Amino acid sequence: MRAIKLTDFKGKVYNLEVEGSHSYISSAMALHNCGDIMKMFIKVKDNIITDVKFQTFGCGAAIATSSMATEMIKGKSLDEALALTNKAVAESLGGLPAVKMHCSVLAEEAVQAAINDYLIKTTGKGLPGYKPHDESLHDEVHGH
Image (cartoon, rainbow, N blue to C red; front, side, top):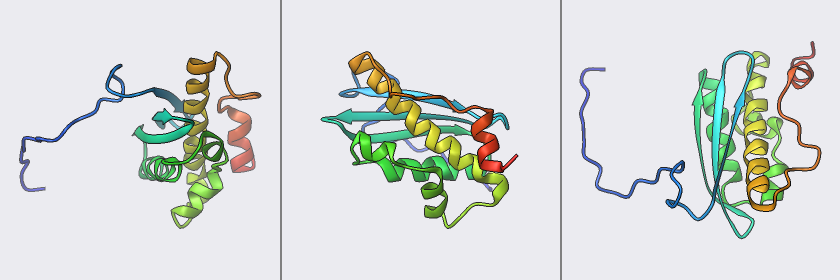
């Protein structure tokens, strides 16, 4: 890097965490024991995810899987988004090393958590049988 250049942005900026700047927004955070943190925001209208954003603190694989998951669920119904698997995310990226598969699990979990949060906020009930990421899921992915 040689220099930092500041440029004024003249377009519209949406802060998905600010109430009133969206039709409806839900957010959720997923945390993995390796320290990766993934926060996902979904904007839903008529049961369709019209926009999705993420904020990830983690390695390159965590950021890549977050980004891919958002691309894969945008424009999908909630049920279609819930069908997203960590394997589909990894395959869409051309594969992940075994030691980074937990990043795709985290992306899948963030999608589920955001949809669960949306359902709780709009219907008072979350996803039936929804269970946040835990060590058993980590062990299943890594075969420990």
